[in-house]
Image (cartoon, rainbow, N blue to C red):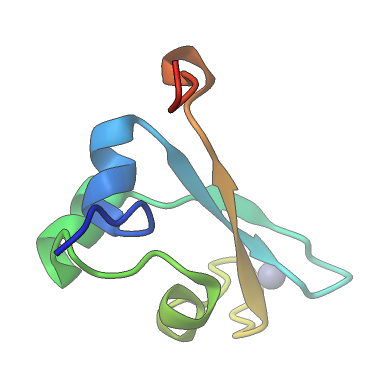
Length: 83
Ligand SMILES: [Zn+2]
């Protein structure tokens, strides 16, 4: 078992932020996901990827299922892995 940088647990612990964005052109609502809540619900090993998360999401504004995710890496903790 190697380290997986794509899990909910990793992103929570790294201080990253994942936002949901609505692809509905007239809406374009965006909101940060509650990673702590997602880890509690889905487990820390759950993959935080577009195809794993978006089926669970819908837009809270227009109720569209046409949503995507955007990852915002915690810039303060960003260090070179080779450093
Ligand atoms: Zn929307």
